[in-house]
Amino acid sequence: MESTSTPASQALAEIWNAVELPTTPLAQLDLTGPIQPMPSSFRIGPAAQASIAAAAAAALLIYKARSGTTQTATVDSIKSALECTAVFKMDGVTPDQWAPLSGLYRSADGYIRIHANFEHHRDAALASLNLPMGNGTTRDQVIERVLQFNGAELDADITDAGGVSAILRSFEQWDNHPQAQALASLPLIEITKTGEADPIPLPPMDRYTAPLHGVRILDMTRILAGPVCGRTLAAYGADVMLINSPQLPNIDSIMDTSRGKLSALIDLQTAEGSTAIHSLLKDARVLVQGYRPGALAHYGLSAEALAEKYPGIITTSLSAYGRSGPWRERRGFDSLVQTATGFNVAEAKAFNEQTPKALPVQILDYATGFLMAFATQAALYKQSIEGGSWHAQLSLAKTGSWLRSMGQSADALGVQRPDTEAHLQTFPSAYGQLEAIAHAAEFSNTPVHWKVPSSPPGTHLPQWP
Image (cartoon, rainbow, N blue to C red; front, side, top):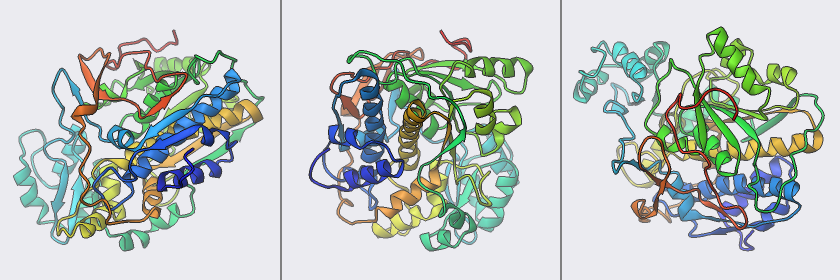
């Protein structure tokens, strides 16, 4: 790694040392580019670069263990930031990232952010506002109605109705919230042993084979952070199968985030679905899941149950607000976590703006996704050496705490956002012509490659090839 210390290299060293891995791969990394390539008071660039570098370094560690040789990797800060923009084109068209009713609204006593990208979440919010459900209700109608509500009461109503929202808080207000206090006791990345098992060595390979070649991973995630984890692991050679429920919708980003993945449908609520998922799990090394804490236990798929049934398995779990505390089961997405935990207030203050201001990219989603890929590989490495079954747990809110701990600076407020269009590349896709951002980590011996085109859910059978 570069000799000159930067915020990204410092953050990377802290991430790496916290999970107690051999430090050799850090010397094989080159972190390049400007410190802060995004216009923000927060360290968006370093967070993106450090989280991608952590995932890449873990791949280097596994590569050395399997091939007996070393390779180097370069992670550029501009490319890292661009990978976090979520920008892509399908057949020349850039899909809207936000549905018409998603966004920030002024309430009677402050602001509330409503997430309406899914129709059932939209309708839950509209029902709470006593407005007609469906596509007929306009944003102006929502604006007018939200003004009549107390923010906290509306937030509670939407949440109780199965919707997703968050009232605006400052850092000080968030720090006094019981969930923030519960989160404070958790590490950024929590990796724990869930059961005893003999080590399962990763098979040897030659120096030109990708680090995760032959590692089978089930991806049971849906919105950005989890799918980015699976896409990254696929980029490093893993056989990743995305599992969707036929009962749940997806957003357009699946066309981009399913690069490299087989894509199957399984309904866990049926006997056939239960049989199918366990048939896949018996030959898998990893399950990555983004359901709320405890949700999969109902189906016998908790990390502890999996460790008992499939000794040596790795489970990587994502939540919005952490595995403990009053909000442990609360739904949440990046934009909502930013609003709830103080970032929108702090960013607006830094830019001297009166209206709450979102961060320039959904960095909580993307950094968490890359850190999930890192944690998954760290657990795989530990299993292959020490044995045991392992559970890695991360949350968007804890990644927010990590970003906040890097501090704020006015140095990059006037930085020009990198030109996304100039960095789009064409990738195979069953959806059509996909133009998207390449993975920011570049390896000397095993270039990043997605073996499978991004494909709609149900394209593949739920069985390993």
